[in-house]
Length: 124
Image (tube, rainbow, N blue to C red; front, side, top):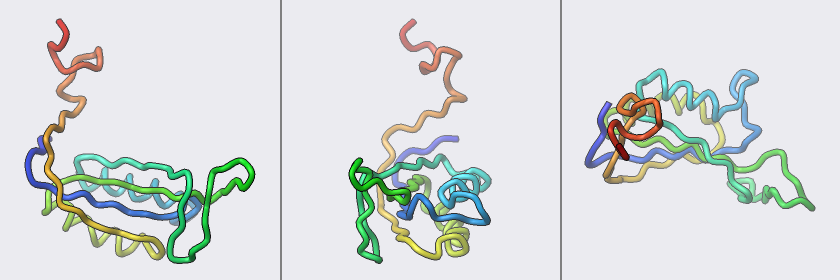
């Protein structure tokens, strides 16, 4: 898959303890994005934050939280993102979903690499 030029970044902000049928919600989102053939998805765990509840969740040792903020970030074409949004309507009952326009400068998948983890021929 190639991705270059105008795109959208879809970000879903939720709590680490949010679940979908006894599975972490962020895992369900990533797996559905994969099933939809999205270019990729990344889950980032926050160290501190709050949302609509205004309850601060933090990883600081004195107030260890089991519900840290999590961001699921997906970048793909406008069309693929639009086709994926109905999945999020079903999954995300609490949290924040937002879109940003972005420009993909470079996207190289592992299928374009040799066994060394470097782009084919790089460093040879």
